[in-house]
Image 1 (cartoon, rainbow, N blue to C red):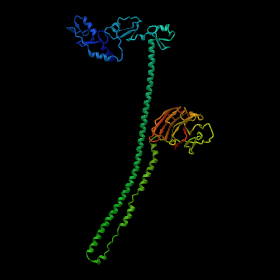
Image 2 (cartoon, rainbow, N blue to C red):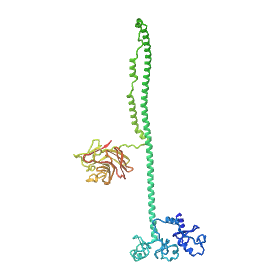
Image 3 (cartoon, rainbow, N blue to C red):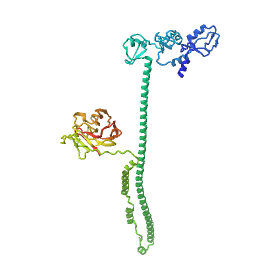
Image 4 (cartoon, rainbow, N blue to C red):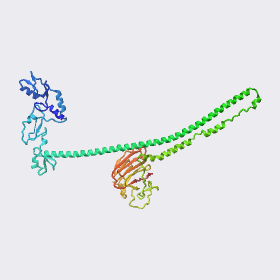
Length: 512
């Protein structure tokens, strides 16, 4: 609405077109230069054509530079202005006639023919684009079979004779409606996707908040228990310190009393010696009190011993109790437990090139093939599956690959091909398995399509987490640093087994 008002403000009240070299009179009204000159030439007494204000002399005509700048700013960028065919100087056209191949301002348009075969359109300087290149007739129809704009002759006697044809305006409206319907549908689809992502983001925030709360409370409990252990150890140390201090203080008081008694004896003996009476001195019992030195040493050993063994036992027992309570603390705070699944190697599936350990946790390449009987379950490639399959829930296991320069591990359907020559049966090289491999580079594989992964440090231990219900299979590097390697998000249609490929001169081990 504001744009329409601005356009009206930029129109001359005389010719009703946009200003051309606008002139301002003293009264403030603006006119095209040519319009004002023409009006002034016809006036006996000069006056403003709009407000009729009188001028004693013919007004001086000066271009309104500010209004010119405003008009330049208001014109659409990169749009070529079509001018009236009959105006001089040029005036912007308001309509073009395809029949006349001419453009008209509002003034000249009033004299244009009103015949129906004269088709008026928005101003254009390209009339050839509106006419049939074959018959030079106006394009009025649309052939839906050939997706082409055609003239009457094309439809009646030309290449489009007998085709399904629509009037150009109706076809344009129909196409507009189809495009708008498609765009609206895509907009709704985009809104749905945005809402799903918003819901996902909200769910992630809520889950992160729950984990943050649980882990925070867990560490509060941990600190509280460790504080209790520390308090017990420090209390015992303080008790022993107080006991030793008290014992030492008691002994010091006894020694000070003994010291005072000895000082008295010394004075008495000195006085007797000064009396020059040998008989009295000899008859006197000099040390009538028992000396406490031997008892003091005994008391120090019994009462003054710092029992560090008792302190260490208190610390050790406290830490053992703390370790034992960790599982209860995690359950109390509903923390996710990374409980390992019991994954064992199925010797019935192992190729004869693989040696399986007695505990069914290790698989290594053997230069001397095993003599196992052939069966439908056994691979001819150097692979082995787990005895257990997974068809629901979450499962986690860890694989030590430190003894393998090259390795390939993952999961596979029960129905994976086991007798195919070449790579067709390899883990990740078909639609029935998903794998992580380290050869020339670290790669995730499925359907023989690979995704190269970053590997800044050698991988020694891989953690595998299978969430069958949520259709996710994730791999983690458990060395320093611990990091996520890759996650497959897919639909599992069969029970899955842990799967392992054993390269020459290598071995892998499932960690208990």
